[in-house]
Image 1 (cartoon, rainbow, N blue to C red):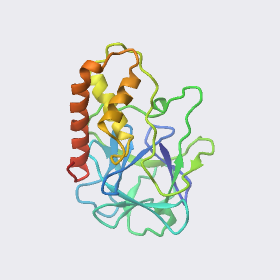
Image 2: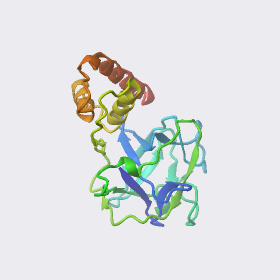
Image 3: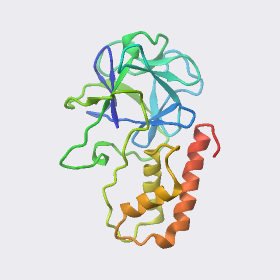
Image 4: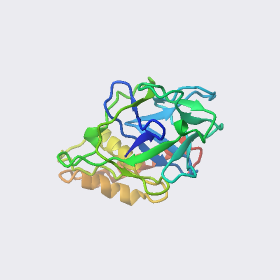
Length: 237
């Protein structure tokens, strides 16, 4: 998980009404990236134009993330046109919009690793939950009270570790298992994850549940979720 910070203003990306925001950046099979807030994707209009606002919604939008000539500073580019995440001014609450010039510091970003709170031991308590509706929310810059997060040392990768905090429910429903599998696969590189690895991760998630008889369901869910992701990033497994 990352905080995304503007190079020029040092303000943090977030959604209106939230004091701090962390983002999941996931590398897709075509080397583009998905940027997610909770279960919603950073997105923009179907036909991106200059000054379009960056929003979050249900539909995946692909982005190109590249390091500038300054180490640790990146551009976030629309995958269809040469427009970049940026700021038109330095005021808090300024919407993130698509801008022309990748060399402008207002259009450059730092990715700072988010640290786990030792008391909770979990990332899930830091990420807001959403109702899954298709509504969109504009991404803005906000201040942050985080304490000296670690700067990403090299190029962006598929980054977060799944929250493996165990769930001791002895009889999780199919819906619960499917959702946990979706979350797990969302944190994994498609090049590295396997059906066996995913199955073992879910079984470890529910140590009190006997999931051996639900192996077929797990395998079918695995295929369904990966197929959805493949279709979203334009590839078919």
